[in-house]
Amino acid sequence: MERKGAVIGLDGAGIEEYKRLHAAAWPGVLAKISDCNIRNYSIFLKEPENLLFSYFEYHGTDYAADMARMADDPETQRWWAICGPLQRPLETRRDGEWWAEMEEVFHHE
Image 1 (cartoon, one colour):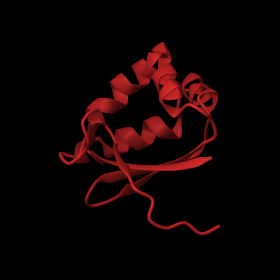
Image 2 (cartoon, one colour):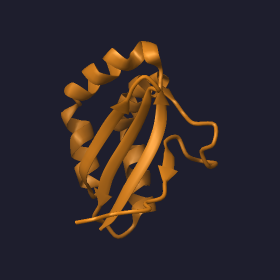
Image 3 (cartoon, rainbow, N blue to C red):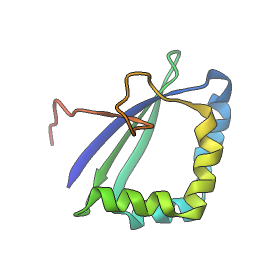
Image 4 (cartoon, helix red, strand yellow):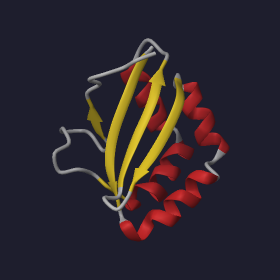
């Protein structure tokens, strides 16, 4: 199992919409997340900076393949088309990243 953390900005005007969308996340999107071996997925909001922090645990064996399967899913693509314009990727993210991946520097069970 791998723990993953990532951060992205959120358009201040879109905060309520983002919360509303995630309070009623689409069942097909949630099923695809599970199908791609992601568990214990959470997104946190830090205001007034309007930063989203995501955390999840990956329980598969090929992260890149599972993320590609998720990206190929039509319902997930529709979800991202709605949520994506509300997000503000960090300028310091690596090439190919939307959410900037973070290094885990501490963990305690």
